Picture 1 (cartoon, rainbow, N blue to C red):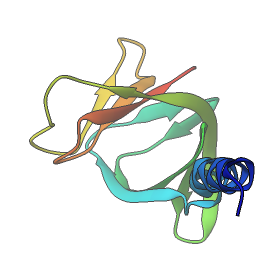
Picture 2 (cartoon, helix red, strand yellow):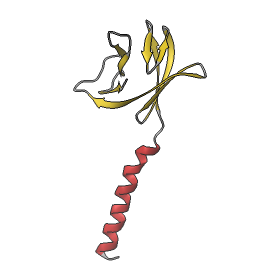
Picture 3 (cartoon, rainbow, N blue to C red):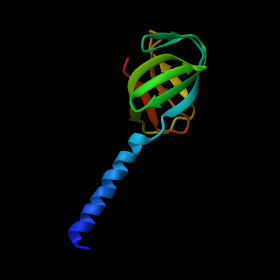
Amino acid sequence: MKVNSIQRIAALFVALAMTVPAFAKPFTQTINLTQGAKIGKASLQAGEYRLSIDGNKASVQKGKNTVAESEGRWEDRDQKSQYTAILLGPDGQVREVRFAGQKRVFVFSE
């Protein structure tokens, strides 16, 4: 093999490695709301929900029904969160969700 061929193969592997996260499974977590909250345009009552984050899209399920959807982004923090926590704004809007043992948090756009 020529050096050019080896470089092309290496570049192909790098490109493939970068696309693998795009096919990753959505991140899912059970969350408990201790009070009413808003995600996107939906108002949620206190209770247990399933949060699913796929890229920048978050959806919330109650049982088999999707009850809320919103956009957001992942951000890194300096320290790992000790517990899963939901941060609400003064209007009851969910601002971010922190996950136990992780440095990254999901920040909602709305």
